Length: 384
Image (tube, rainbow, N blue to C red):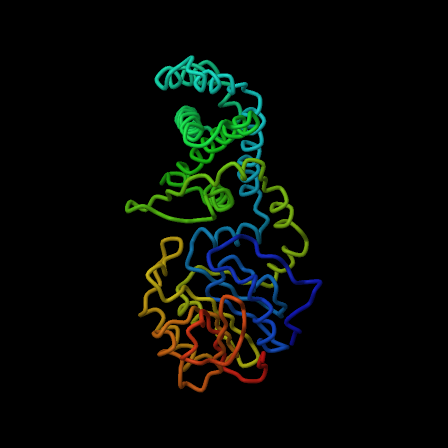
């Protein structure tokens, strides 16, 4: 059996994911068994708990195809995946450097001073982009031969919108410093490149190339506005670029981390699956000295992540498995709702509560500040 925490093997999560549990790790470690054999996590998400825990073997799962593809490709140190990921990264850096050298500020200053109107501004932007089309396309890595003209179109659209919006804000508020004007122009180029990759991400042909698609997924995850993941009725991802603060962001450190000896060694002892949680447990049966950590989707109208629904029927299936079939010790963190309480109360379980200030106490139905529950099928390690 292993001590659950070992500073030399405790690692950071691989990716930011909705509902990540980095802030809750202290409660999880405090309440988890001190020693375990194997570790199981059916809703691994960004992996903050999985990466922090120590065990003999790890069994992780998630319903998100894209997320699990990322785990699989990282675990294999897949060459094709990193070739695509680095091609995206190089395209990003190239575009940033190019955008800083265009000198397009003068065009905005003419627009601000009334030397040209909105229509003339749009025409001049189109002329600039058309005349510099090859220079703009040269920023894309040679690997990206598909839909290249889309990048050019997005540059026109984003520059026009950005310059017009800047002037509108100046009229409503105050004149922008020259440095901010330049930053906004750079942001238009970066947004255009983001939109190019977003369109590839939604392309059904691109989805057939697992390594390329996963590399774009990783990029989108890191540059989308507020880390949001949202889809339209057609199933297309539609969140815009994160904005100026992302312009200088790079993924070099992430790539180095993913390929580090510590991370790769962790995956040597990890089985990765992309299944419904019940099938995951059917294929990988936890035993008495094992530990299961669960962070299922919330019981709410927003319980859809990466286009995978998790309904109350699924919540009931999960509760039935945990309360009636699971031999291992398990700990769940979940949002407190009357329905969730109805599934787990009066089942001989240890239920703790904590609020947004992370104050932990025994469960009390009358405490209106309760936001989350820690539910365990053991009582050996109370945190209070």
